[in-house]
Amino acid sequence: MSNHNLFAALRAAFPEQLDAVAIETDNGLHYSWRDLERATAMMANLLASLKLPKGARIAVQVEKSAEAAMLYLATLRAGYVFLPLNTAYQSAEIEYFVGNAEPSVVVCSSKNVEWVSRIAKQAGTRHVFTLDDNRTGTLLAEAARHSDQHKIANQSEGDLAAILYTSGTTGRSKGAMLTHGNMLSNALVLKDCWGWKEGDVLIHALPIFHVHGLFVALHGALINGSKMIWLSKFDPALVVRKMPEATVFMGVPTLYVRLLQEPGLTRQACANMRLFIAGSAPLLLETFNEWQERTGHTILERYGMSETVMLTSNPYEAVQGERRGGTVGFPLPGVSLRVRNERGEACTTAEIGAIEVRGPNVFSGYWRMPEKTREEFTADGYFKTGDVGKIDGRGYVTIVGRSKDLIISGGYNVYPAEIEGYINDMPGVAESALVGVPHADFGEVGVAIVIAKPGAKLDGNQVIATLKAQLANFKIPKKCFVVAELPRNTMGKVQKNVLRDQHKGLFS
Image (cartoon, rainbow, N blue to C red):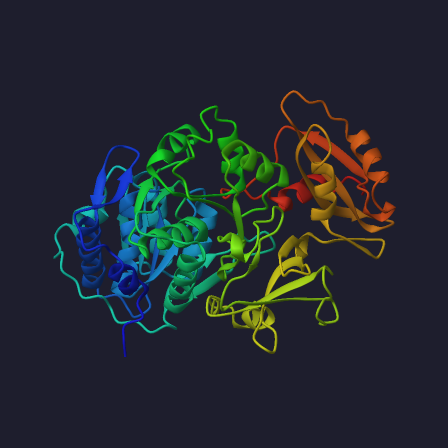
């Protein structure tokens, strides 16, 4: 039986010229494909020397660096399970993740090693290493003592490769278990669907503790043997300067908004670029249109989750259809996607319902949560995404929101994304969020929080008055607040749980 280790497939895609540049960093360093081969081998040998149990978890909370990416690849190579942790997490969060996952190894930044070591020790973790973004730390020092030759561990498609903890906006975070087969199948499908070709160069400006940067972007470049321009942090001016050397860029919507503020973003600057991809949060239609007008490129929006990697994508080739703003395109090859109503029946065209998916990319379940795993799958094997959406007559999927964001006001269903769309179309509005808060008469009512465009003046009462002329009364927010900014997580998603907490006492 052939080896289904994801690293084996990525390694097989390395170009023949191993001395060519694989990663170019923003501080002038160049790593060859041979460097990746040797460094991952030494790190894998270090992990193997620790005599870890089968399926051991390697928890990592470090700043973005080429070495951090190599540690991820080395973990796959050695046959262990990678557990990336957001660099924004503090002690209480790390205590939960380490206690829940019980990693055999924890790798952290030197500045955090004192308190992280204490938490790790309490959880029974025997090995703690440091890794910093300046090529220092005990992990590299120890790995340097090991051989740069390593036989890739044999893995089956169903073997666990990574655990990604969900954001936990409704209760404790859940660890989504992704297998080697889940991620390899998705990487191969995306390589074809997004037209990866010889000579492609990716600008990698995303964090690597999340699906988007760690799996979609990194796997995409590696499975194609493509060079990466590796940015430790997103710098819009630097991205624009690097575009003439690159062909592919992936970003969350916030990054595109910030790039549009750069005077250097012109059609000429983007002339060498082949593809711009957006995901992880909804892309405003205004951003989609402005990008098209400014650069001559049409952003390709797609949809995925921690539990599934990528599920849908707008077309890359024009013969497959146009890239439609406000939609996430069609289900990827091998992915079955359906929309069902509250009675479990298939929704009609354009009817809003719950999105359910099945395919080789869908995770194997939640770590140590068998009951929760059973709850989240249907009897016929579909995963309940928790997203609400619709499919139009041509098959384009549109995400309307999260089921937990649904507002039931006076017995009527209110979908926040619908109302946000109307608000965002109003003159002077940059962005909006609608959340449900408790109300004695209606059970729940909507509250709108709006950001004005620079120089624009907005009045919350006028926003509501404008909506009343457009929508049914049960959909109208009871209050509208104009604010300077919306709370977001590190991937740019608006934290509606924070907004709900801020406004939950409005009508009590």
